[in-house]
Image 1: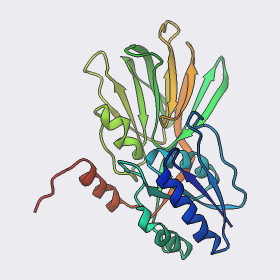
Image 2: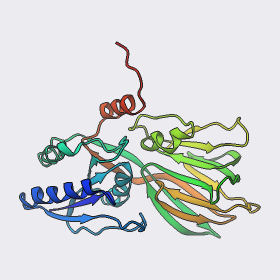
Image 3: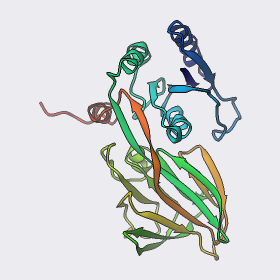
Image 4: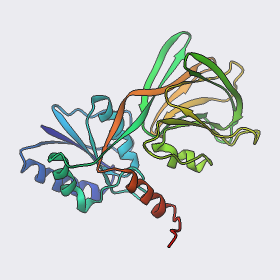
Length: 284
């Protein structure tokens, strides 16, 4: 078995830990493939790890998001080590990494299976983009301070339901895992991480009557870019992968066929992170 170690870019601390981890894993006769990013490289690159049994993420939540898009389609578990500032997803400290790995190796590690979304772009009847995300898919204006129009509908149990024609800065389509990210900053609800729902949250809507919606993940959300759209529109996956949209495009977002397998993660850790990161007071 081999391990893929993803290292946060431009982090000496992460690089140092990766070197120590490689020595530790090699001592267990586990091969190690280390992967990081150049300063100006794109998140849509993909590492190659033959016979990979586990992915170790050394960084913040952004590194975990990349790990999820890489590992989850292959069913590979992720050991998320928090070396960032916030860390809602990455829950393991650098001091706990060897203990957490040994627990996984012994089959004693807790595992949280998180909903991921698949987004595809249809243009003139054919698919021109397909991608997945753990946090969110965001359809927004390509320029600063640009308002765009977007038409949203959802297919639930073979019934097509028109939701609204939005005039806004964009739409966030978030998982429960991503509910603490861009969605929360835009005033959306925070969901339990095991919840299989999708939040549809308009960014700075022109009318305050447009509020966030929570929709079952079994449905398919369909977002249309109107033909009279003037401003540039882009699709962004997990804040890392982007794709330019054109007038007449449809973005279809639904539950992915796979889930992210996060090791040493559970509800207690998530709610503890909410108290710590958001500074919620506790009752005595």
